[in-house]
Image 1 (spheres, one colour):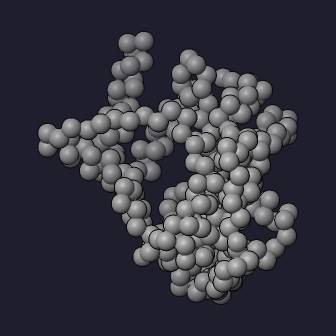
Image 2: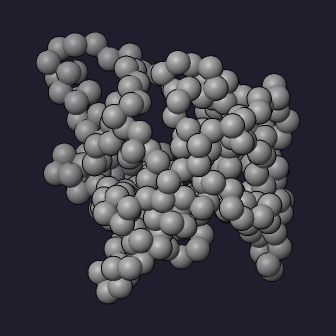
Image 3: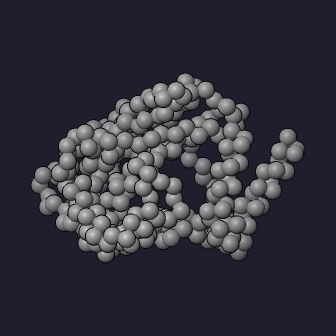
Length: 275
């Protein structure tokens, strides 16, 4: 146990040093490798049962009708806007479920610039619900991966890998809305490596002699209630006219989504996610 603690201390020191130098990708790789090497071996049925405990499969309250048939359609995004969105997306991120990420798409657009115009039209058609129910079911379908935590309790952390085109559409809308959205109590939005900067700012405050309150929210994954978010989009004066955001929320979160959990021997389970 003492030797294991020393290993964790050395790992923590290395990760902190890399983070201070903004070597975020390298630090993250160290953390992932440590979790993978120390994670307990959990069989697929047990992992699935633990995941189902974390997933809310029944709505706490019904989601209000977002009345998308009463608001203007989203206009096609300009090619330059799509390029700006792709540049703001993390280039070191893993590929999404379709195999795309921002780096690959940027390389494609450099070879064939007309792709940016097509993407702008495609994203607008997605948010304007120009496709059938099967398309949107697939778009919302995430691949849920249960990562065992290195603890004796055999806890599992759920990770969802989303669709690249869903992310691109949402990011295009979000970038247009940044001038209007003002969240006083949230930081790191629209800033590259925003979360890492918050950590360093907190450390600077602590070193200056100020107190820090540590809050660990237990099982926070399923706590965002879609009904509350929908009600804000409908009735809060600050967001009532943000039609593009309302449309995007309706297609991505207005309905429950199935999360596919891939097991051994090509066995797949589907979990309905209500919240």
